[in-house]
Length: 375
Ligand code: IPM
Ligand code: MG
Image 1 (cartoon, rainbow, N blue to C red):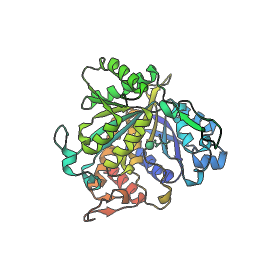
Image 2 (image 1 turned 180 degrees about the horizontal axis):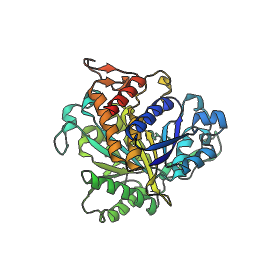
Image 3 (image 1 turned 60 degrees about the vertical axis):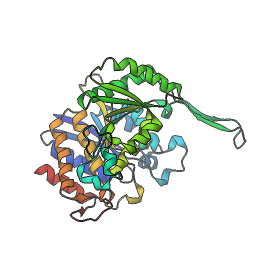
Image 4 (image 1 turned 90 degrees about the horizontal axis):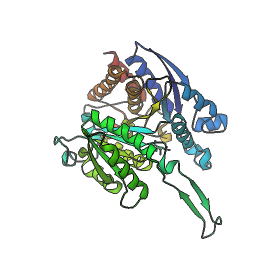
């Protein structure tokens, strides 16, 4: 088959890590043809086109079969007004592509236990099989809520009554469609789903619960539970093994997924898929794939960034957009293999002795994955 992919490498370490994702996808799915279209968004687009998300980028991305994204942003653009910041590009792409369900798997590779900040007992606590590990999927609503609600300022600027506001608003439709994604994912996993909210305080959260209770009935094989977000933050750190699928709003999902990533050893390990409804004439959902880490300007261009999250995002693209499960699993196995062989970028080198570990740069890590794919 032939696939058209928009590559938005972005800023900072984005281009370095994305190039390895492209190579890994090519290698793992060599029987297929990929056409890569490079597009600009984020800080680099501000520099060249004067805006974070040029209309041509969004249009071309929408016409492609999937979007592979690196990272956007950096100190250079931090003082720009909100609507001109590189992060706007991400929000614009998410909304423009209609990718409302953001899948963020967080697992602990056994080889990276050293880089996980939790003690063995903590990992084992509440794990259904008593293992010193965890394997969860955070499903974050991505195109609604406070990120996209009405916001603004009022009062007299500089005066005591000056104020600012953002609004959390969710429709039944928006909640239902992301819940269905989460339930379908839960059916394929350990069949437990935890809806995280702040229903003791927020009306929007009480609405999420109401809608969840209705949808839950359609998925009787999945056990549904509810948790307040403050408690969820604590439970992630006290007993992460208890979680299978977590489904939550845009803001809560943003925060909890960063917390979960730290448990995996490094944010440089976590991939994500953002999926939407099927477009007319296609048999797969719209999809955008990106590592959950940012542009890490401090290490950009230094051959230090961990390319594994980007490479794993490539695997998610093969799986979710193109149905190439075998090829996706091949990439995931290759990543496991290089970790087993001892390759570590600095972020996952761990705190203990470096015995048996090969400290690798971005290139060496990328090459090691390609070599593992060839084997
Ligand atoms: C993420 C990021 C983004 C978000 C930022 C960069 C806008 O933190 O993808 O988690 O908040 O969604
Ligand atoms: Mg985030």
